[in-house]
Image: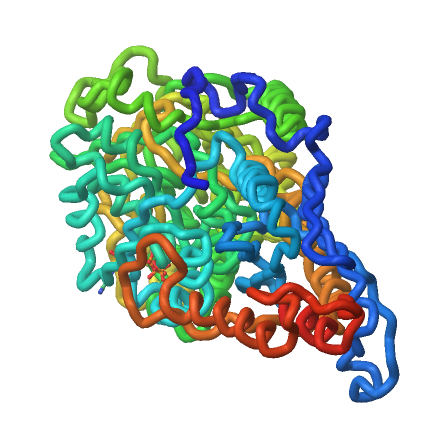
Length: 639
Ligand SMILES: Nc1ncnc2c1ncn2[C@@H]1O[C@H](COP(=O)(O)OP(=O)(O)OP(=O)(O)O)[C@@H](O)[C@H]1O
């Protein structure tokens, strides 16, 4: 059952392009309905998209919520586990053990285990083939199994819960999926960058950051400092386990800010190229994966530290106060524009998304960078910048404009800046373009407020007052806004209300991190970074493709998710869960599930053993059927 490397696919220049190598293992075909008999009354079937468990023993379970379980309730005898949710399957002697992610009532999932003994000993070879076929469906050819992960935990990320979230929600999933995990906690600002700079890129597939967006930013920049930076950025995928206050990477790539759902998305994630933006400022070069902001967004993000007690609301409050105060942030802006026609930009985007969705429904091995291409084709050095650096004279292809009343300058590489902030609705992962938004700060307050209310729906682009462009490069020189003498008290009150306190200096944010308030030049470098993207969110309520940044759809789905999850919970109420206990205490796991998870699976088996002679070892005696009380109990334990 060891995973064998698949034949390399041609490297797509655009992750939305698909190389059809005919390796669609999930499509319905002659062998799409392989059935495994695991007892007289139970079968495991490989359906088109899911593993179907049919067990007559399930029929007689009592629903716990049904008059304290006193009234018998006949439940479904089948249950479907989407292949996406299957974390691992193996044949241990004659026992088929399947670990999978089971959605929980709230937005999340936990590891559960299906465990059946194959009674017919002559079926060993067939069973092994069946388990292999299940694994092929659980991990299509473009998905690497048993990813080798370096996990970085920012103990101070978000509300300081990263360590707890990792241990309770994420580690059991990585362990069940047999990932190799090496955990390290960051001890200071910049530590993640150092770790990434010194990482052995041959030994690691993924750096997963249990943090906000700050650690992924550091990791990209650390990889860019390696001796062979381009190779390192191609070889190692950067992932996020959302544990911070800003989790845009997870929301965009996995369609969720739930740590456990993100963990499944990482396990099942497909390597995908991502544009990075090279930013030169003074003597420094930064690589940005998410956004750059000058003006109201930067101020509301970085300049509201004194309002941390407000939690997530502090950003919205910061924006509101500044909008109502008509705060302006003058700057000179020079841009290499690709397109400023909103209609054309939308069309291009729709076309790319359509192509992507067609490919996704065909289960094509999309977005994959074959792991074998790293050595052969990736140059080791970073590409030279087409438009030079901030120290060079401005090339003539830049269009320059003075913006004395600039309110918001925001540039993005991904759609969502948080779960409910859809700013860059036409951003694509590797189109080699940045989405740039400019809004004048002197627009009427009512218009500004209306704009604010449309960010969640992603319709900000529709306002004629909003300049929305696709750009290749830009240079911005921000200036401090001199407050007229008669308005100083007002400015001071505004700063206090907006959380800026005594801060006098302007703010620039790159991926949410503060950089010096001085001119910088930015240029998009196509496909320089690598991330993991969830091809499907096969958990209940998340069925279907989650496209790169159609997360507006995802957000709409969130409503359904909650309902679906609630329905699922009700539906499955009569199916006692195998609880996922606290995470293993070890921080390094290889091969089999780590301690408690393994114990977990084991305890399920052990209780089955006690309950049913059908499980493990002894074949059933004459007259023993799956409908026997013991078998029903065993079925309850496993499902
Ligand atoms: N042990 C540490 N002590 C202090 N700072 C740290 C530590 N580890 C990481 N950091 C820094 O914390 C910053 C924020 O990290 P992260 O994005 O994970 O959390 P966040 O809560 O989403 O961010 P923010 O504080 O911006 O809201 C990063 O700049 C990172 O370098």
